[in-house]
Image (cartoon, rainbow, N blue to C red):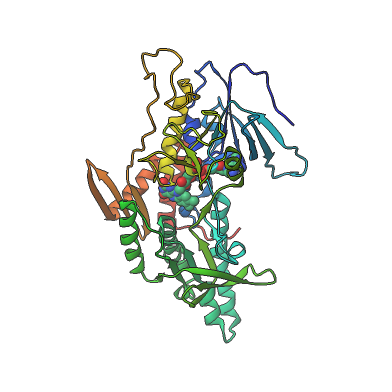
Length: 467
Ligand SMILES: Cc1cc2nc3c(=O)[nH]c(=O)nc-3n(C[C@H](O)[C@H](O)[C@H](O)COP(=O)(O)OP(=O)(O)OC[C@H]3O[C@@H](n4cnc5c(N)ncnc54)[C@H](O)[C@@H]3O)c2cc1C
């Protein structure tokens, strides 16, 4: 089915409803008479506040507190709930497969035309390099992942209780295995999940399952091979790993995972066996994967059509995709799926902070009606304006620093204060971390819910019901 309305002005199509898209949609407006329609295409009809996903995976906050329906972000924007599976950059069409939970067989694919396409589909989690990992590990990327992890941690405690009650010879060994949690990835996500899991085990599971809590252990695996260039991240990682390693029930292993094996007929059930390059092995009840992302298929195909090379869509300083077969200005890209090609901005990290600044930049280019098709130079205003420069300014990223929660009401943050590097660790950093994430929520509703969740989990503990 092709959805084509009578064309009056420019049709803008935005792919994705993540950090880059949400921050773009939030400020895009209907004041530009040249723009006919703005349509968001995403398999999710909500925005997910990923920095608190790790807290949600142990119940410190509820998943519903950190999502915002995309339709409430901006009533001027239309939404199609579906995954773009193919972009035709020559006919300027996006082919979409609708995503429906009820009666999913009874839907037809949809095709929509565009004049300006904004690609912000992010990246997907991958375990491709490690045999067996795909079927055995838990990912940390979506709201469903967080819910599943929360359920399975409680499940492992219930299974361990059964093992204890069975009184078999091997019950201690079985319980220890079930309550060993291996986190693969020593980056900020792995560190933060380790801190959250430590809190959950200590504060809640310790109270609910007092007889078996002594058998629980968190093993954080850091291959030590990722070379961090960002001084903030180096600091966070070094000090964070050191702090976590000093905790009871937490162990750090400098190892590289080469295979994961599961049990059961399909090999996807606990206990799992994690094999390392050194030949060592560890038995565990859960493996949580906190590292490794890959390009989405729709981006791979688009890059091939445009003659682009590399891992991400190459963009110029004005976020325009620069492939040899790409009509200049017809496709923009932002967020994790894009990468600057010119000097100086090569190494921008794939973070919410970057995506959240690129979105509003693109929205302003569209709101102000810059002509994006100017070749070899910046987009220009078609007519004189008293308020905006004739030539669009290039995108500039403002680095506000980084922070990571380490569990036990401690965090670590690093920032640049008047050109001086400044870092803070401990309880004050923890209060700042929580305050920033409350303020950064995208709506008053989320701000209220997250604040209440933080108080609730502190005062009455996290919910360990499994459903
Ligand atoms: C657990 C976790 C914790 C994180 N913590 C932090 C943090 O503390 N600080 C920080 O700066 N960054 C953090 N990040 C990184 C941050 O979330 C990403 O850098 C950011 O989400 C990138 O934004 P994006 O818009 O490019 O992609 P995403 O936010 O991933 O959004 C992609 C969107 O595209 C949609 N989509 C996917 N496929 C299609 C398709 N075929 N068609 C249409 N739409 C599609 C998705 O549904 C989604 O809505 C974290 C990430 C994770 C997973």
